[in-house]
Length: 98
Image 1 (cartoon, rainbow, N blue to C red):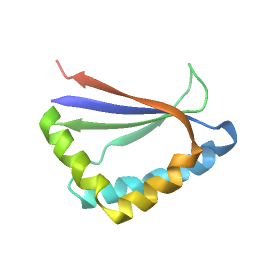
Image 2: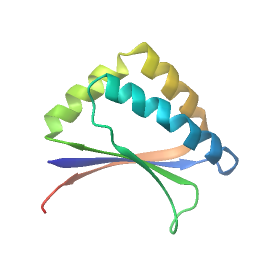
Image 3: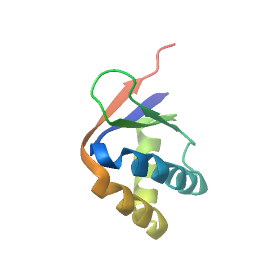
Image 4: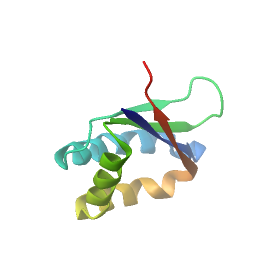
């Protein structure tokens, strides 16, 4: 099992809009067979951080899911609305050990 965390720094004035965009993206992900995942925001650390986290059975399964969502026009449109709100981001990949 692996955990994928997409960590985004959101433009401060856009955090409310970014949080509002997440449920639609998550719904599309589920429709396309991806794990439901969860969204997290900062309480401490760098301000205006939005984390989208999912558990996958393997890295190969994640890669297959990524190809599928990125080819979907509805997902492209929903992510296209989130993208301008993001100042920067990175992906973290973890192996679940317990």
